[in-house]
Image 1 (tube, rainbow, N blue to C red):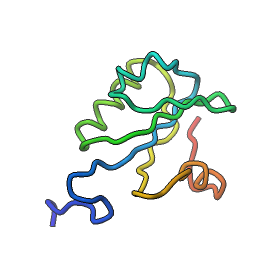
Image 2: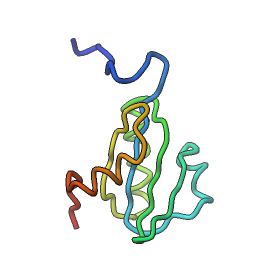
Image 3: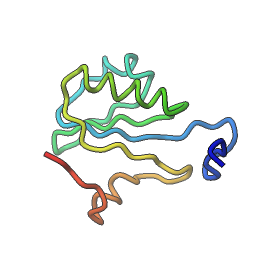
Image 4: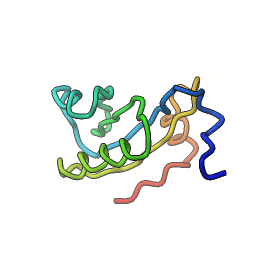
Length: 99
């Protein structure tokens, strides 16, 4: 069982993650983050969104966040076909923010 893939992600498809950071991260950093989309939100947060090949790649991204010194707020895995998941979760209070 430990080697089974998540049935919600099609074979050969990388899961999509959203990484929310406190503070603004400029678009020039997109290449450093493997081409993840950078969205600057009205509340001053930055949202990095895109496919992440595996857990090792995810930990690599989180290490880069740490190296920049921006506070990490949330990491959310988005199911295929789900849009605006972070906004929907935030609206229902399911995202805990640790300040």
